[in-house]
Image (cartoon, rainbow, N blue to C red; front, side, top):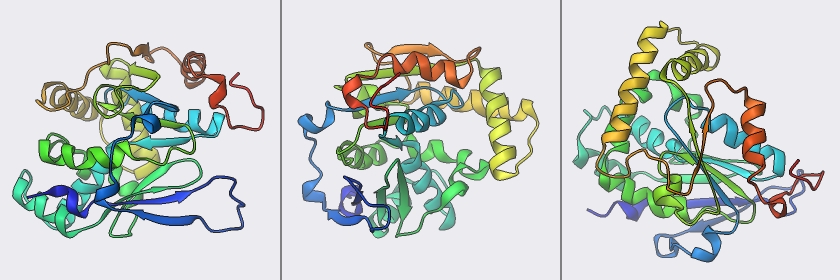
Amino acid sequence: MNLHNSLWIRRLLDSGRDSAKPFQVSWISKSDLVCREDRLVLQIATIDGPAGCGKSSVARLLAARIGGRMFSSGRLYRGITWLALEHRVALPDRQRVGELIENHRLEIVASSDSFRVEVDGFDPGDVLDSTRVTGEIHHISNDPAVRSAVLPLQRNLPADLPVFAEGRDMGTVVFPDAPVKIFLTASVEERARRRQVELSDRLSEDLPLEVVQEQVARRDALDEEREVSPLMAAPDAVTVDTTLLDLEEVLSAIMKRIPRSWNRGPTGSTS
């Protein structure tokens, strides 16, 4: 079973785009999904870390600040998890998951400032962050066949703008030659508190803090102990503990590592 067959990337490029004009759409087939080092190492910053450490917020704001794009690898695994749940697959069932991937189209769609994941042209949106998906995602993200299948998609993101790629193995597996690598961390208690706020604000899900903390700790163990691409800091990554830092302090610490030449913002400065 070759899970690569149905994986495609839709690129909506934004080079000098007039906001009134539509994006140019092109399709990249399996044969074009080739890792090209000259594209990977130029302007990619990886931001890895456990759940709730602030990866998504930091990557999004960094991209906005310098005019790049934010990519969240977790959206791929959440998209496949959501697809499996929608088809009532009893996870873990690797054969059924493989069949779903072969028979449905998973896309990475680039906008002016980020990437989103679509399944058969449909954007699941915030439902990908629901506790339903979060509770089952480890079955998908721990599957070696799935991780192998989505690797080419991640490595062939449009490179016309700087990319801030956040996940758990961005700096160790997906982009090992990235010139900027950050590893964010925070205490379990603080990460659970942040997750609880996110669930309430975005998804109207109100869970006791102790329940969320148990979920976060369980996810940590699964991420750190899996055989393929376990959660760990790259040897050359800069570790930033965000427990006692506000978002601006975290951004300031990372911005010092970003080359000025990456900046596409109106100020022309990374300060």
